[in-house]
Length: 354
Image (cartoon, rainbow, N blue to C red; front, top):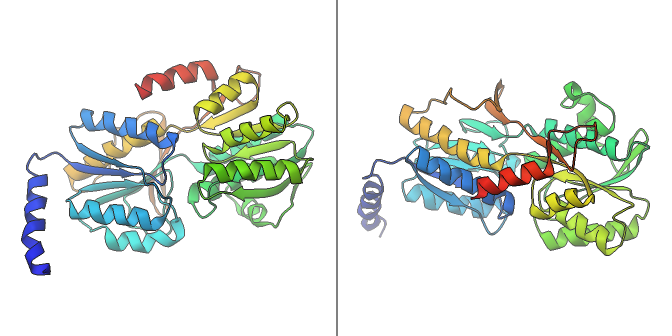
């Protein structure tokens, strides 16, 4: 049976490569609006670089689902893969095994652990972005207070790194120390974590389940009425926080700070319910992932030099990292941490979505 399948697989591989277009796949870690925007960028790049792009958003946020998708793509003759991994610690060896050396392989948004064969990482410097969120928390509640963080999973690198950056900034550490030993220690301390006049009561995870996140918010507001700031590390967390404080009629008592650009988050900024959001640039993640892989395929593994100005290349011990600059979005410039007002940002985002 196996012998009979080999000619069929070879024939399929040949047919897929007859048009000579690079075959590239972009695999997200879950299905949310953030990744829909990345998909728009990937599709725009497919047109600009004359590539075939297969954009996949797994219905289940599991490593097993991502591995199934990869095995299917490899069987179909894929030449390049960009992936945001679900479990950075445990997927490294598996991906090294199931992705053939002939397939160029990078990570985006969520990186892998030490020993990965991936060519590079592209995404946000998540510790730095988390640090900006922490500064916004200090700005929102300058007299101190009790804080709860919400996120999908903590075994995903971007979640751990953002949380560490948040804690470092709340503790008053400068950005240059946000990746240091003291920041690591604070991020590992048991709850409640004392951070000067601030206290981190808990970090609530929800396995990327929006309803679970909403339930976590309500549970927090009921069990911890003293909380005066909620923080969302993943895009869908902030809308759940908005819905929760509105249900409990506490939108004027609790400050909300978070990540990303879901429509409800942007409207919350306009309405004054959300203090600010640190937005990444998923459109660029998708676009530049295709650009990088296209270049790798055409040059037998070389990384491109012609990256946009808002992308900083850092060559670290585990390889090249392309860091896409995040931005702080507020209703208006209030003299604090600020990059763009919400109306200007929303107009630009609508244009990118098409």
